[in-house]
Image 1: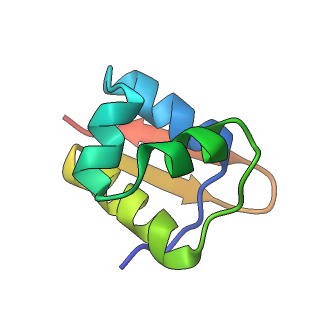
Image 2: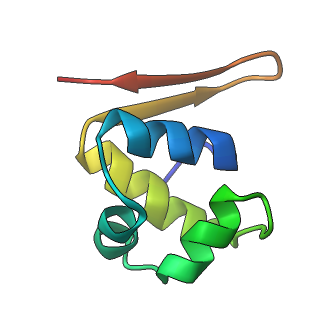
Length: 78
């Protein structure tokens, strides 16, 4: 289970780090591509369980997210 909540900007940045298209992430996370596209455009808020699926997919690929009140951080662990 994910311990952080990510922003749509973090989602897109992490996807870009992995050179994933929206199709790749939606398939790996098991979510609808339209849901992901709307989220990344800032048009939709996601349920916590949907965000957890996205974060889990990224973590399996080596991405780690850290959030605090002041900054956001994304690391690619290889």
